[in-house]
Structures are given as C-alpha cells and as structure tokens.
Figure 1 (cartoon, one colour):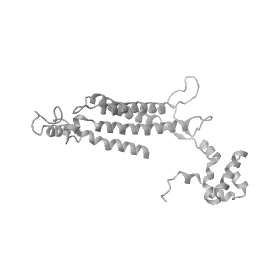
Figure 2: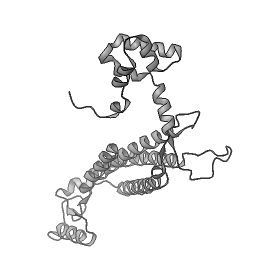
Figure 3: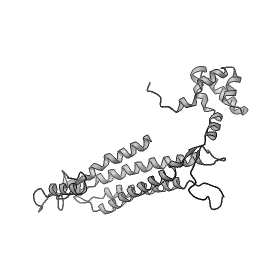
Figure 4: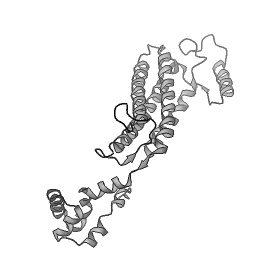
Amino acid sequence: MSQLDRATGDVQRAIPSLCELEIGGTAVGTGLNAPARFGEVVAHQIAEETGRPFVSAPNKFAALSAHDAMVTVSGALRTLAGALMKIANDVRWYACGPHAGIGELTLPANEPGSSIMPGKVNPTQCEALTQVAVQVFGNDHAVAFAGSQGSFQLNTFKPVMLHNVLESIELLSDACRSFEQRCARGLRPNTGRIQEHLEASLMLVTALSPYIGYEKAVRIALNAQREGISLRQAAVESGYLTAQEFDGWVKPEAMTAILPPR
C-alpha cells in the first residue's frame, strides 16, 4: 500500500505543471501579434470553464520549445505501472500451485477454468495488469524520446506525447479498477499452507543468533536440513536452548514489523 501511495503521490505532484499554458506566445514565445494579456485572459477563462487551475506559462519560450511537464507526468505513470507490475507478480507467484507451487493465496475464480486443465484457476487479472504495465513502459519511452525532439523554439511532437500519456492514463485506470474488483477484493490467504511453510522455514534461526551466537545457530540450521526435521526440533536436540526458550525467542510475527531506527 505504501508503494502505491508513493507512486500515486508522484503522479499528483506532477499534474500541476501541466496547467501552465503557452497560449499567447504565438509562434516562438514572444507573443508577437497577440493582444495584450491574451495568454492570461484565455488561461483564466479555460480555468473557469474546466475547473482546473490553468495559468499562463511564465516563460512561453520554454513552454513552446519543450514539453518537460508532459515527460514528467509520463515518468510518474511509468513508476506507478512498475509498482503495479510488482504487486500483480507477487500475487501471481503467491497464488501459484496450490500444491506444486507456493499456494499461500487463493485467487477468485473469474473464469470456468483452463481450456486444457479442468478446475485450474488462471491469474488472468494479474496477467492483464502486467500487460498494461508493459504498454505503459513503452508509452513512456515514446514520450521521453518525443520530448527530446524539440528543435529550437518548437517541439512538434506534442500530439504523439499526448496520445501516449492519455492512453497510459486510460489503461492504468481501467486495469486498476478491474484488478481491484475481480482479484484483490476476492483474494484469500491459505492459512494452512502459510503455517506449513512457516514451520518448515530454516531461516527463522536468525532470531536465535542474539541469544546463542551465530555459529551455534548455523549448526542448528544445517542439522535441521540434513536430518529433515523442524528447526524447533533441531534447536532443542542441540542442547543449546530449551523448547520454552525457542518459543519465546522465535516469533515470526515480530519479523514482519518495521523495526525502529537504531
């Protein structure tokens, strides 16, 4: 959630720069042949009609020769797409299985199943969201390249930049809405599978290091792996600690919290 908050915050912070209009700069930004205060008056009228904070660009030379604000917005959309790509892939991998994969999440069954494997639940919403992210990455490359193509006082690439930015916005909006309604809302944890993996994890031994030292913790983990036994059993059999001490020191829930700064 924090990752999404940061990404959407970047998008929101980039939007105001789009509200600076170069209108009134005429050909190259001088304002030649435009009535006095034309840019300010028109920007104010557009702001009133749309309810958006449009203003006349303070430097119309820069506003006409470059479209950096549009490039910035596209970059923020790409960052958002990257966050969504990671989330969708994490969900997809956590749900893979359920028996031959991780299987810690249960996906909602939006379709009857695979065309070849009966009963299989495909991660279609995850796959759709990742494909949208790929398209947004491509759109951003086009926008960035187009933004670099201004020649002297004019950049004629604005149409392709607008097309790609608007397409990215529409794709991300639709994909996020669909993913939330048809996947995120129906996700369920497979608590039994999670507990199984938790009990089988040897890396919980990390919590023992402050109490018995690194070397003894290594011996416990390696012995558990060699013997095919649980970490708890290997720890108790080592004689380095008691079962009560293990239960008091190894608390997986404590490992999920953000530690305070040292």
